[in-house]
Image 1 (cartoon, rainbow, N blue to C red):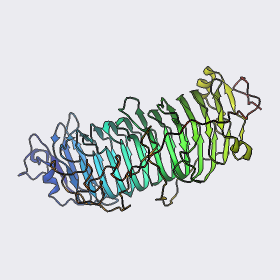
Image 2: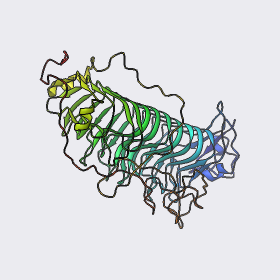
Image 3: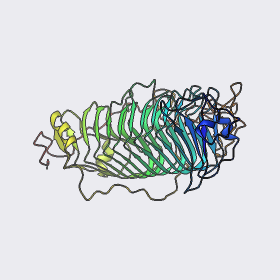
Image 4: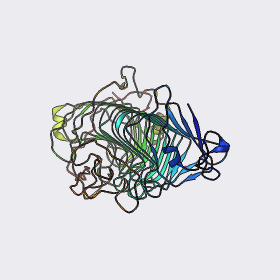
Length: 485
């Protein structure tokens, strides 16, 4: 277990690299070593490295390889003008912590077929300058990103696909730019926890949304703050999803904009949506679709949420669905429900026992929500399950998108990476064959369009005649400490 020191200002590649006074000068020198489990690479505070750092070797579960920092002052910066900040494939048991990645042409971190990675206390700024995004993991298991800050990147702040075991904890993501950009995009993954994050798209240039869960199984999304974007949480296909105790606000820009949307891109089963504060937006919870494809939408339990300052209804349902909408707190100036007549007639989604509040009461009940969640409701517990890789999507060329996926045109998972050069396709641009993941330059842009339109997304939902109904009775303002029966 060796500690290697790297100092761009005072180091030399002729040094041994094994103490601070004999530090290496470049990351390429570290790449020439065969790192062993338990080895640590420390970058000197104040150093700037204008090169891509390729991680080629794996640690072990008890002795990971760690990339970190040492010394006093500003965090060391990896700044790669011709490629990614850090790139890796087929590696495991890696920790990246206490560094900064900024002003890269490609992604800040780009990794494929990896497992047991932890990204901790990392700052990411202005990455994806050629359009390739920020922190990107594709295919693998057990990825943790925690206590990190991502800001002003091009494309998604985080893009994660086909990973079993994802933990996104206490991160801040602000202003992910681009018409297909979300703060977080997570597709075809399972056993997910997204907790305690602050995600803000308020000042992003042409953002899509804030959080996308595309065909995800066994996920908990809790105690997050989501602001801005075209929508809050797009959970359009999945199984066993708990979305609770989040604050979602400031979303809009489209007639279909919602705080939480589901049921548009695949089967939707067993959703627990509770304890959320949904305000200052368009629709609340939307169970809708751009097409009439017969997806299954069942077991959707919506309760104990607070809805206020919405221009449309707290609940929208215009496609077949089963579940319940009950014991929610709805401001008096918000339409409680907008449900198609067919759903009302089928009685598959009863609405009952909700509270009508004035504005001050809506704020108070969010702070002291003692009636919102009953003990009989148990949040989903992530358990091992395989993800469905066949999400149905549709393209949008007019008015914003609900989600997109990063599969290559053949649906393959193969990767090949190298040092990317500026005079040819690189990881931040499309390769001539539409950005295949397994192309000769490993050049793919999961946030962009390929020539065949494989960036799946969502048509604007055209306004249609809806049956406005409020099924809780009576609907009157009253003391919010008592139930409306």
